[in-house]
Length: 112
Image (tube, rainbow, N blue to C red; front, side, top):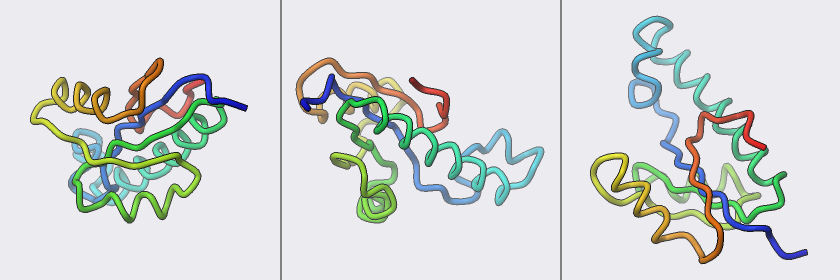
């Protein structure tokens, strides 16, 4: 069966102090990173289940190999590029294969 498009999940390496920093102010950096890790896992599972080709846009670039290993079920991984969020999203569109593309954050676990 041919995929019905592409989902790109924008994901950071789940490092305490680098993810969910506003939440970390209330619950601590370790707990915030653990929550982000669970959100990312659920988001990737839902993206793959959607029947769409699923790619990860990873920050920092050095985390690409580790996240590809962790999420072996995805179709591909590439580094995020650009400065602000808008530039990184544009970079995700440019790096993804052609077709209808949906770019989502890694903390969207209810994606359908």
